[in-house]
Image 1 (cartoon, one colour):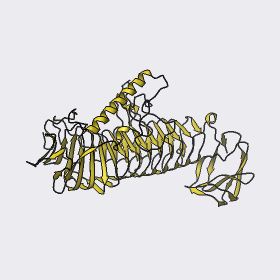
Image 2 (cartoon, rainbow, N blue to C red):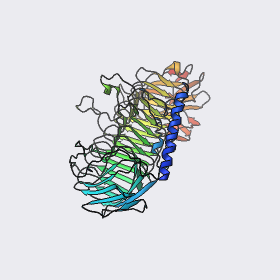
Image 3 (cartoon, helix red, strand yellow):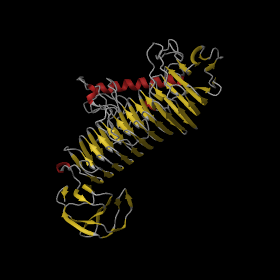
Image 4 (cartoon, rainbow, N blue to C red):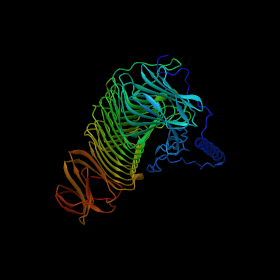
Length: 580
């Protein structure tokens, strides 16, 4: 056994040493679980339980909503989770109470103001902490750095408050959820991760002041107490969930592996997180990435921005991404955001109930994405630098998105749904918006600028393309054909449009649609509620718009006057699909 591994350590919880607030909390949770079981047995086919809100996130549209009592699109149970918003009451830290241990990294000293915790004298590099006369925490200095091991049960939660500077790895073991307060911390590990959380329990990371984590390309292999290899994936790595909040900032610079990784899920509630990864991904998680607020900036020079892999699980098959609020800025070599699990990963497995649901839902926030890699399908290591990819369903309910990519801007494996938001997508070599299944637009603003040739602005192959609302335009080599039988809002398609101002105006002089085409486009598809059935329109090129309320990436909103340029085709809308 290498240094840094507590002898005989296990991750089981004890039932002794209770404190009153957490005992009551446990009893309440047990009662709620009992009531849920009773309701499940007595409810009819239409009954369902509702999950407790984990954050003040926006409500997702019913077309993509999946509550804690429902199943994922691949059939698995998703207890405690809402896959469309990421709501999970267990991620709330506000209802928890903690006993604080202060660890000063400059001097490697431990102290506590809690009357329940007694810090002992350091001996042989080990500082013991007792609770009711029993040693429950050890802080050990070894060749790899600092190892903090807590065997306290879930009835007494600890807050490890770190401050100062340290040049090695800090490793955590804990039998219970814990809080990790970073108060102006600088961790520059010379070998391995800066923060290494070897616990499957929740780590509530509270940010105060300016904090930085970094590593080098040196990563010596380590083993656990049972002789198995220690999992080391990122500069900040956790076996369990990582929930970040606070008023401070955390910067992570990864030289060898991912910047931030969890074998469970990652959640950003508040705070500022800046990640830079030289060789791998900015964020890698197995189960989920949820963003409720704060600011997240990611830069990668060889990897992806955010990747949620998804793992088969008979209890909670997750694998989703939900962005509810905040500011997200990603510049990545490979995909910027991907929920990547594919059914092909099942191999010959016939059981589907344990399959993850790799969906992505955008409920709000400001998202800016740029990918830089050159797509390559024939390379040994294929590269597809897409903007946002969901292997199942991609839903945009709200938010402001600016996406510039070298591959597809938006990509969905099964369904792509736009219910709202302000979305600009530009792809230099592929489709701007692409669904391998169906596409539905019910609202929002969308400018989709795709590549020429066989690529285009809006592509869903020959699958159903439904339009019931919104204002959008798709330009490029081509666009998919809108399905007339299921669409209720009028659409117009044009061919071979030159660059310049395009205006559609009725016989009374009212502007129904105006857009400046940035480059010559073989295919143009547009739609707006201002395009009325049984109304005659004329297409104009050039001219001058006298007044308007806004220009959204070339799309003019609220246009009220127009000095005509060159008149082109005239047409009357008699159906929801009009081709010119």
